[in-house]
Length: 152
Image (cartoon, rainbow, N blue to C red; front, top):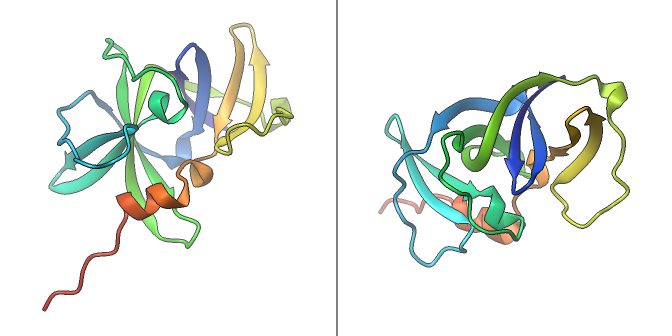
């Protein structure tokens, strides 16, 4: 499987490339008052508002640093109810695409963060999969993807 590799803090993580819509440079985001700190803001993607999550803050680390290789990764997020949404992920040190054989993946044996999946090792160390479907807790999904109010 092909993965987009990036960092959350000092560690490498990967997203299956089939879930990635586009990788964007850091762009100005609209601040969203009264949202949790890990909600970085709202992105205008061709006229479509897209919420952006700071992966470092979501993981309990310092905010994503604005570096040369920090990016906004647009993904197809499918909620547990089956609803599909465009979601932006603020990620540090986006490294590019890497091929990883499914046979190289193993369970981590640690269930601390529900959105972290299997791991694999290579010469650069370990890489862990981000389980996109389990990334957002229910309360955060309710904030980011509230149903549109009925028009009068």
